[in-house]
Image 1 (cartoon, rainbow, N blue to C red):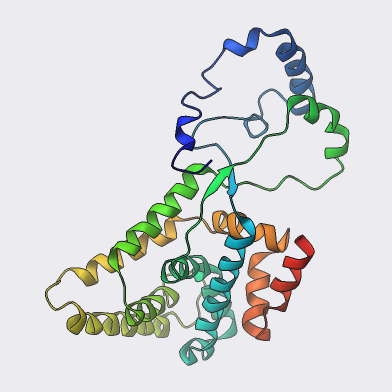
Image 2 (image 1 turned 180 degrees about the horizontal axis):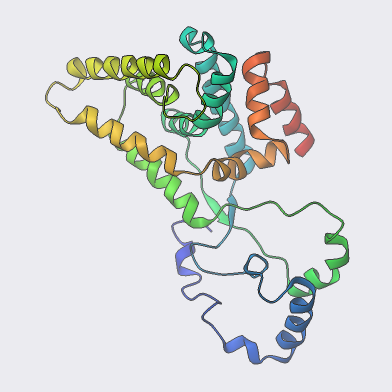
Length: 274
């Protein structure tokens, strides 16, 4: 089941459907569920709305490997920027935390990474009841990406692909995204702002010989790039990296990759998860 045909499977949400509530088994199990999990906890109910349906990668081994390669290249981009390395260490961490997800998405665009998702199977009511005592002693269940969130990400990728950016456009746009002076807490915000203006100026200049007749391309690229921040980093983490790093903090993994110049932890976690 892919994102193109999943919409046909469930056109009505169970939140609005009442026909199954008269079944004897459903009623008995629901009483236990309400007692064990709380009848007013929406996070414990399986909703079939498109916006709430949870999904996972259809081919996690292939896609996660491609995503890992993109992340390594994203970290290498930051590592090889002298202007980034000259920033105070605290500012580097703030920019890393704020900008890694937009830069990673742009890397997916540049590397032409495509993927499909399938709906995450929900545990049956009976299984949830039988395992209730065990689940209380286990770690909390990971948050799964929603179909609506994944579709928003894929729409963002498709919009960028329509621009058909050149390698130089990608490079300067990444610089404009990384050097974001609006990140709270920066010590060298004025210097970072100058770096962003420099990257934007270089992007504008490279467009003249490449697209001499497209006067609005520069503004269009920046406008579309602003949509990258509408994709939650948690969606990126849960979709592409939870199968690899488990419960590890993705920022800690990226920080280790950046400052220890290694991706061994990412690789090791991949073997551990498998």
